[in-house]
Image (cartoon, rainbow, N blue to C red; front, top):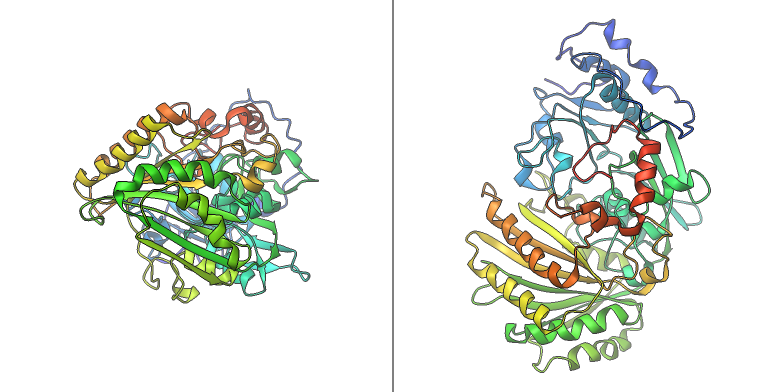
Length: 523
């Protein structure tokens, strides 16, 4: 069965040509939202079973129902553990009008919705109904096909479609000698990364991805298409700077301020596992206060891919003069008694560095993706997080090292452990209330991860990363990063948003009074 479109659709869910026209008005411009809806007004009563032909007639993109030939691929996320999801339908939106039509349809029939751009949601919300996620089978509204990236004539800003992946953004900008800073995972969507804040490999010199944001096209629950910026819909723009995806609307386009693309040194240092405690102690006091042009991540990883003992390494980027890198690393190296077993650095253009960080340095852009035509592999994973405001004492370091060593005994774990990404620099120069991202004065974001084979029961790997987090929360408190969301984090909204939570809750009531955007851990 082909995908349903405006031009060709099948009445797969029943209905008639008459009912197919009922949703046509959803594509007309919506009235300007006053933002004054009362949170006490109940949602409208559903009109009955959803008539999918109505939605097909109202959109120019593609609507995939379960019997459609393209449904299976359209429903996939980047984590195979959620492949059992059977969403009610997947709408691949062609633009903001399609999104508005999808939201109107969901509101009319009381259909749950899930939102997807890059498909990397840690707890599987974007899958629209995978087992273990607590999400009912849903209409998935996908912006994955909105991948255009366009530079302004003067190159100072870039318009980015909501479905563009990081490597697509890096390629388009880097080829023109311009740059933005973001994460290192090739297939992560620029939208999800930015809406949660956006920690990346140049974060200390460029700031968070959300700090480089100048505008957002976002469709709110009432169907209004907002062009939010620092001057228009200011509160909504503020919320899009770290308030998390899927809370206040569906983003269809982002605009970023760009910089001249710098040359970038990538570097890597590894030590014997016996030095792990010394490396943690040295790194944590050095990295957040280093020169703003230097960013680093500390990784301690175990599992089946680490024979004999786990590994401990620090890697990063440097955008200063090539000859100065050695001096920058001296404080880190001098804090560890043992000599490194590996110590390398390489000079790159910005684009080369970003493709290297993404694992695609020798891969054509068209193949830097997962799927049948891609060179990358989807791998099941578990993950959770902390945000650390303090350095660890000897007890904390001991607990951390012991938890990594436990990864060696978790049957079936390909790789698991901890990654600590330095903050500070430009990130800490912004007031915590200036954007929704509250963790401005933190030293680092912390990610606990485990990967495993396709088809394996995720339970033991979830238990490992969550147990690791519980151990370290005794030292770092309960703070967490919304882009590494976890359904089991206690008081998750406070952990993610801290003192900014009340303002986010107020904006949620203003822009989504009926709770159309319901997801695990919604504000």
